Image (cartoon, rainbow, N blue to C red; front, top):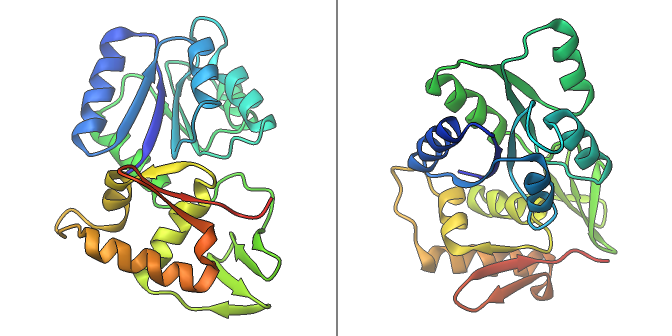
Length: 223
């Protein structure tokens, strides 16, 4: 499950996509023009961007191009009626990861969204993210490295660390963590989550994972 920014100026389509993706368990922030999307992009971090191209204010191509220059690394899908090869090329040159043409089936949107959300660390220029002077995370191979040695993590701890690394410095709500760590047929457990956090703290340092009372956790890498 992911936090998704949706830019679509057609009110009916915006509402349809929002309701569909929310029913799947995603957290949707929907906007109707490029300027509003621009503001939302710098207010929070997102797991995925769904951007219409021909929108009031800044169009989708220019919005994403500017976002990439500003180090926004979230994967992006353009949803548009444009269908020429030149438009397709322009879309990918601006930094998108996929392209879906209107009209489209909601099932197709679901497949494309979920395929991108399963991957990790988009548009990340650094192959290693430094957590501390002796600890780093290899974004290419999804490996935690301490003193140049790879450290093995349990499945849930690994998922949790990747979620923290992708949202460094941001408070991640408990509910979002539950949806990320546990599959739909599994029962989330607050006790288990505290255990996974405790295990990670033993490895990366207690000060790196801050508990935010009644909200969630915040991960802090070195400045």
